[in-house]
Image (tube, rainbow, N blue to C red; front, side, top):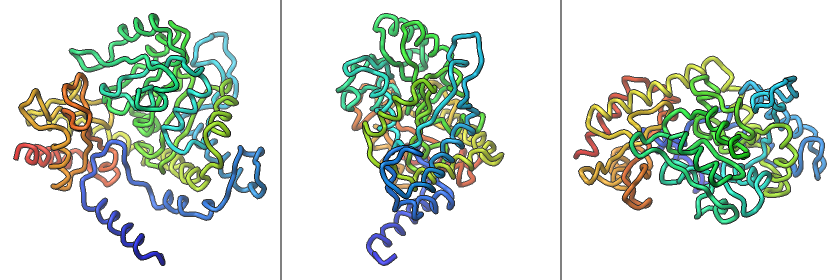
Length: 400
């Protein structure tokens, strides 16, 4: 690289990544093949529009790349684009599936779905940010909370898990246009069937944001949302171990609306190099090795949570079913704030993020907890015995 300044910074960041224990739940490490696709000449091509319907010439090969990514995305999650024959009217049999692979990241993907399916000023029922939801699930500081009204829901006070009966009451009372399930800081398995029943009880669309657990679904260690959802969004850079990108799966009946919302509604030309990199990651996720990886991610998370509990740390909801763990570091004033905990750990080479916990009494800029994830370190080959050592180190740092 001729630009020595940028080269030096890339080398510094590469060294930093290799020298730390990475427990950021939304990060992972991509393969060399994914990196090669990202840095390929596909970067040079402008491809505004969709395969076979471009506004620029010279997209014959690019169309093949994008269609291959779509094919692999559907194949990975066992989806068919064909209309199934059925006498039942439920979501599991209504229509085939389509996938838009042009969304630049998770936030615009979610925004596009709302643009397509929810009238401006309509209601989006999403989890409170402080309970584990995402900004783009209708939070007030996000554009999604300014253009649509969020109907918030949270977890149960006693169990710190979802109370589906309470959610149904909210839905029937508020009658949202769309319900969002899938979260950024909820460690338990989501009952998608119950969410479908809730959506049907009030006539709402059901959208699942599986950004965090998509790789676990692909690996067969987390239930698939596709039997029950109308729309499924996901990033590809977390447990799927791909580039920073997003996919929007939808029933065929919504495909045209979704496409129009992405382009020309929100974006111009897609990043075809990133689409190619996502296609590489999707193929990698079809391998037996990836299934083994996904199983290890969950095993590692369970051990890490258990080991921290043994050392006296309160784990939100009492444990985890996924890659994600929420730790109460404040513990009613007996511990330390999440911001300080994160800073202390980083000084010792352990990277986490501060995070609110349900019913947090502290402000989001210095909350009561930290969020941990095991996807990245599992990619590096870490197993259960390593999680025990990591828990020991976390405990030692935070009690120093």
